[in-house]
Length: 254
Length: 106
Image 1 (tube, rainbow over the protein chains, first blue to last red):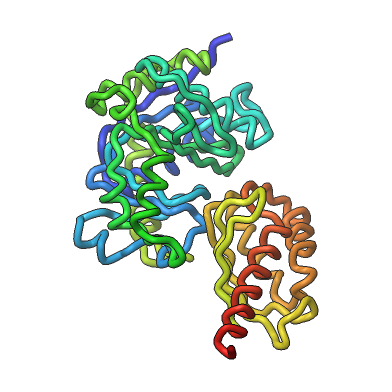
Image 2: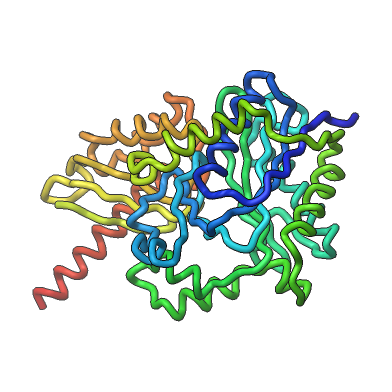
């Protein structure tokens, strides 16, 4: 049986609007005002998103982010800090109890991540789910994912790395005191890969997003309708951007 | 005594813990203000803060069991964090502090 879904391709937006729109979509699906929804998007300007439980000053060189015009936002999901630069990001919202939303968090990560794995396969990349919340190719991380459950819905969002600039990333993120920067950079370079590194060539955001769309449709057996966000969702996203995600109270919560 | 503990104990993501402990520091010392940060997941997120604040006043040696009980009572699903992981991270920082103190005295 195919699962009715809505697909939103919302292009590149700033970090605060992006997080606001994910939460607004969660509200729409929770209120049954919208079908389960897959959204594909990017970030402009580049940003670092912090996991809900991370301490901002533990993880981020705030002045370096300001100097390099990199926004900082806190997610409503747990997990680690992510430097959003050359990547395709997705979010998916599914009501709990839906066949694609197992009650076990680990199982639901596995189901939803199968869309990304199939999307990578569309690009000619073999990858696999690496519990708790990663996808790896050749043993190296190519996608990180984070999930929350609110108002009777699962919201999972995650990234597919198109290119990785580890050196730049470590000008923005703090390195644990006990680790040498050079060693840390080499470790991460060895553990992380990207679509362009594997394919030995650049791939556009649009092409990668198209493959992810196809991957989700196939892996999750979606009967999908391409739509624009509802005006109410855009208004709510803009409101949340200002009243929540941009506020010092939220960003410096921990 | 204020400790800043960082660790990745077995089965856990990176944990960063700031905690006030009464002295002398042993399993019977009492945990004061405590902040648990890191890459872990806890759903619903907002309830985690309640569990964290309830660790205040706990004997250090019991903090793992108390955390696990609070998580259970509050209906929080966690991944990448556990009571034993919290205790191991704090003990690691205490051991490190003791070693440094010993080295400083030598």
